[in-house]
Image 1 (cartoon, one colour):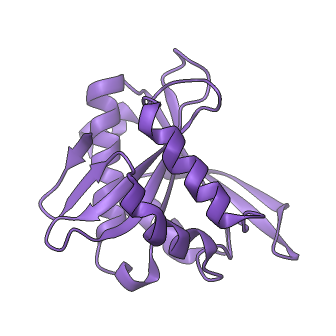
Image 2 (tube, helix red, strand yellow):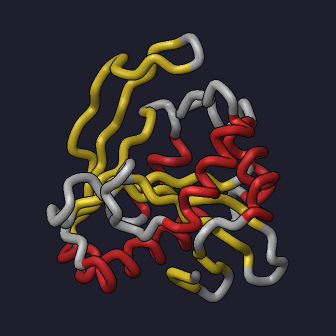
Length: 182
């Protein structure tokens, strides 16, 4: 199932072939520096892909996050993924997360993918408010959010224990009406 397409990307439901690329991202020390590492990444990725086969975006049960695979149209390679936390049903607010594998970073894929996710969520789910939380130390993620028009609404000092250190959380938000104006 395809959710959104851009000139260079296809955003779709994860499939079994995404296991290796997802595992490389979710188990890579550089990729998990600001998010933490799952206790058993292979088992987590298998379960995640299996859940996404039957789950629909916006389903609240058993957990509200939905993962979308990001595929490069030219090569068919899975270059990353985006997570959408739907939260309380009917609230029309989501939390966004994203990761682009280091081999594909600095090519504009993150910005392009997140923009496509926002367009799709406004059109298909009538989302009103988008929230993103980034480690304040993650300059690339913060740069991406600001480039998309997100505004920083909060900064929480040493609020997240991750990989043996305390990190600051930076909270960003964007309203659908701001996105349309932008």
